[in-house]
Structures are given as C-alpha cells and as structure tokens.
Image (cartoon, rainbow, N blue to C red; front, side):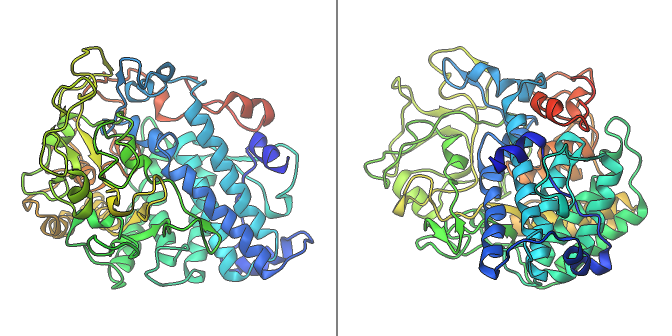
Length: 538
C-alpha cells in the first residue's frame, strides 16, 4: 500500500540542504526510525534495483529517448508490433496524454526517488546518504529532462500522504547542481562501475549543466553560459585525468558478455564504463538483482536470427526495432563502431555479427538464413512506419546489436552483460562540446580526433556544433555523438539540446508545434497532485 501511495502522488524527494553540511543537516532533519546498518543497506539496494527496469527495458526510458528520435523506430509489421500504435506515434511525434510508456516512466521515476528518500530517513552512513542522493538526483534529472517538472518531498516527509510539492525547471536545476556538487567528495573515488562513484556524480552534473538552457526554455533556449561550460570542462577533465579509464581496443567489448570481467570466451573487460549495472549471472549479487539485458538484442533480431538447438537455447528475436539508412550511411567504412562481422562466441555459435546488421544474414556454418516464409533473411535499408509488403515486411530495416549475447552459456535474459549507463567516451564528447560552445574549437577537435583514432574513424580537420540542414554531417558534434552513443538512450536529449528535435527526418515530417519537446503529465497524477500542471499542448 505504501508503494501505491508513492506512485499515485508522484511522491519523490529533493534535497534542499546546504552543501557543506549535508550529513549533519540530514541527520538533524530525520524522523525517528529504527535503523541498522544492514537494514539501511537493504533499503539502498532496493533503490539501486529500481534502475534495472527503468533504464534497461525496451519500453521505458530507452523507448522515450530513442524511438522519439531519428535513430530508432519500431515498424508495424503486418500484425506484429501494432500495439495500438504505441510505438509508431513516438517516432512520428504524435503521441498524446494517454501514452502508456510515458506514464509508466513517470511512475517508475517516482518509485526510484521515493526509495532513495526512504534511505535518507533511516540513519544512513555518510557514504550511504551520498549514494541515495545520487540516485534521487538521477530520478530528478530524468523528471526534468522528460517532463519539465520535479515532484519532491523533504526527507522528514518521506512517508507523507499529502500532495507532493513540485519544482519547476530553474529550482530543479539549482537543486541538482547543489546536491551533486555536495556529494562528489563524499562518494568513493574509484574506477568501480557500481555503486555510484564520485565520477558518476560528476558525469550527471555535466549532463545537467550542458542541458541547462534547454531545460529553462524548451522553445528558444539561450546560449550556453560560459561559466557553466567551464564547469563542464573542469568536471570532464577531472574524469579524463583520473587515470581510471582508457578506450577499449574493441568497441563492442564495452557492451559484451565480459564487459564486467565475469564471462569467458569473449574479449577484454570494459575499460570505459563509469556507471553500469553489475550483472554477474546470479539471481542475487549482494542484494542487487540481475536484469533481463536480453531485450537489447531480442527487440531487434528476427525470429530466425539463430538456431536455438545449436546456439545455447532461446529463440532468435522479436523482430521489431530498427534504424534508418541515414544513420547507417553516416559512418566511415573504417569506423569500428558501425559493424563487425565476427564477435567471439556470439558469431561462432550463431553466425550473428554485432553493431548495425544489414544485408544477408548467415548461420554459424555460413549458410544463408531465411525468414519465416522461406525468403532470404536480408535486412534492408528500406523501412516504413507501417510495413505492408508481405514478402519483405519481416526483413525491412537495419537491425542493431550493441550488447552481444553469450551463446556459450545462453540463459535467456540473465546474461553477464552489464548495462552501461555512463561512459568515458561520453565524458570526452561532453567536454569537447563544452569547449566548442565556449569558443575553443581546437581543444574540441583534439578530443574528438583522439576518439576517432581509437575507433578507426578518419580524423576531422574542422568541427561545428550542428548542421540543421543535415543531421548526419560528419563534421558536427551532434553527428559525432550519434556515431559513438547510438541506442544508448541519449539521442532525444541531444536533438533537443542542439535545437533540431522538432525538425524533419526520415519517416517524420517537421512537427509544426512545440508540444513534443516534453511528455505529458499522466492524468492520474494531475488528479492526485494539484501541484503538477499539464505541459503545453496536451
């Protein structure tokens, strides 16, 4: 009953404490509650576990951030993937207040924030409090990013039943900056990807500052504040110069079954991840459950993409999510990020490559695969929002596998791949972008070309922020971010920050309205909490 109450009220929390006395102020404001170290850690684990569903499932954060962009779409294939148009309207920018996925994300952000606040109300240590504040800030950041409003509760009111107060953009930004700045020295300063570290907080603070002007005015954001850009550069340099992270030799090892160092038969462990979910193939890892990472390949692959009898069980895929030809064609032929025909046991036991899959697909013996009608399984660049051609609808669209399945020990969703939320390359690109927005194109180009060298891409001689007439201009920061971070749930946010989210791209005309810069507040939340206001256009 408590959980339902939090969800209905959008019961979230935000800290308005002084930076320099975070732990003291927290303790003085806490209600009387029984506390044990183990009990508080269990509460903290509950908050951490909230991340798994929210940031990994294909129909939650991923869908809102990717299917609303040029980078991803879910075509209706005959009777498959119609689902009353819930997927199509995202790519076409025609959703409304009834859209179930945005409502679910709103509620699950409330659960994450509520659970993090509960930790703060039960006598946490300074480290536990800092981790809880990080998780609460993560929920608040996504509330701000997606909905433009942040419902919150003070710690002393963590269990209240009254309508939650709501912060608008300016106050939410100030609070995020204050709290993230405060917890950086209190979090562990290591290269661990879990739990939250000082560099994870730095990363999130960089995101807040880079997007600040967009969040303050979605329609006509002001130019970046030079002081904010300098802070982004300082934060980024602290991470870059920490010595904790280096570029992986094989790009896809960042996402592979051994990216956490726990699987055999694959490449090196990831050396680029800053914050990643600690899957290790066991049902319970010190209170942290594993997540069903299989959605990241099942949602895209064809039903016949592998033979379950010879490739560790399971089935081929759900035959849905695709990308458009413009995204595929923007890569240099030498760029290792686009595709690899061979990836360890994934290819050896199933024939699957990794990255963007186009053309004829083969099994592990090199034999051409077929679709369910016996046609050659050829993933085509041509794709439509609604596929009607019976002989090609199953094969239309370039497919993407960033997280390769471990075919040597395939056990459906519980794979070893650790979902990577914050990455070193993103830090480099954010630092480069801040330099470019501050007028230092030389520093920006140096950072980008170092990344190009690591990925096998051709060096650039010039770089600008964006080309609104060509989203795939290879000399722009926007396109550089797409090549590095495709299908990692940043694209919608990037398109908004670079001012091109409402423009036209393949299979979507220009919006004509500004409604879709924000998602609607769910109707149930408006009824339960009068402090929330519906966003413009809904």
